[in-house]
Image (cartoon, rainbow, N blue to C red; front, side, top):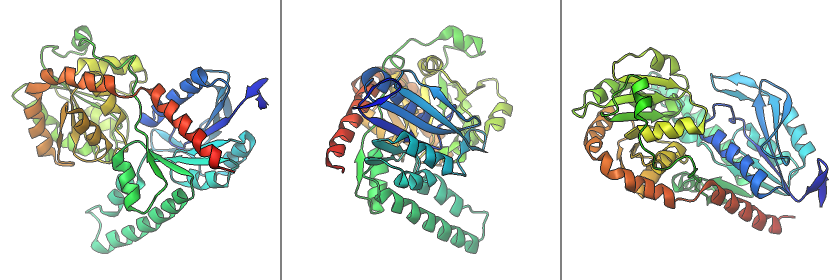
Length: 397
């Protein structure tokens, strides 16, 4: 047994993710929960994350066996920093000397991870570049046919390069069948599905916080439609933006809450309507729990989610979901039978389906909560992942 920080260490796990940020949504939740699980369930193991930051520092985690290594990265948009220089990252990976290395993004992190020392190299397919970014960039209608053809050639090369890196990993984790099937169609065989867990302590069937809604100037006796997620193009946010006026005109007289940050934050901050409130980014689980409990319908517009964590959290809280009809979010909604789907990108269908489901949301609350209660917890998820890693390590040199 090796020693580290003055005590015995059985195994070393290192996760590298360029999209791990203080406002990183599902990726942030995944790594935060993983750190908590290692601190509580596997104190004999060391768990380390490497993430981009404005700082150069090592921050303690929730237990003595957990560390977060911050390496300076370049600001990218309003929410992320990325590594443009991977030499410091590679040096840190060598110093850590992981038994199990997990690359959390498929770009240069995946390339660097293949060169780092590790007994087992895994990749987590947290986002799908082809559907989330490449297709959007290559097929923008404002470009000429020749321009789109050139862009498709560039993205085809980039996608091939990314898949070549993934093939060299011992295992590629996917959180949904939708994501796994997409990779298998592109020729990857080293893919396994492991759906995310849910926090049943905070996300459960709770009464609506009527006083909080009143404090926002909203009527707790009228239905509340909620959007909670990043306000970026790949999230399908334009579908909601185009339909907000029509949603608020529905016969059930709904009100609209939007929670999140992203490229379109300023647009949502500026948009005005008596029945609309913009909450910005909420950074506490308690605040999100109150938000889910106080809404009547979650609208999930992203058709390229590799899982749809907000969808699962909402359902576990007893909140029915109206989701775009593609992606991991739609997969969870269909399994729950506690929501509906609309044609992805079709604002008119979003409004139409919202009008149909809003009168029925009260009857769906208990079904949604029961589905969430039966879903595996985060502890179940990480215990399963840890056990599978242990199996794979037995066959690794």
